[in-house]
Length: 179
Image: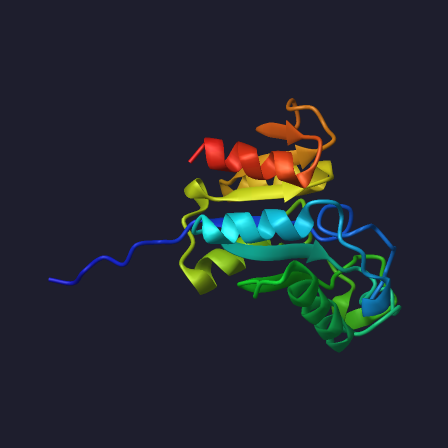
């Protein structure tokens, strides 16, 4: 008889506009500024037992603005600023109208598709029904919904997501109240 390994719950964060101020196509760590409450929110949710991930469309790769390797410094900076070790950073480098042929196609990972979330779930044994996605766009909410997560949109009403919040601290409270 084999023991069943329990799956973890997770919170998936969009990066630009959610965790950090949106600076288009930025890979310069010196320009990364956390949104208010970002560090406290990820720390609080990590302490509550959630695995913490970033899921981010990064079409700047397909557009030829930067390379995949350039994102490593961004992920390092987010770990440093949030004072935690994120469980994973997932990004979609694709964009159908991109300049770099190997990244210029329709994929299943570019939000609103749920591919990044599914990849994290497979790689980290995540129970998506007990997990959440926090974002700032309808594409974020749709990706979370398609993956089976509960969703919170920052600054948007709940007709497009399960919940809405004015800021990240409020989003964390919604999650902790709905365990």
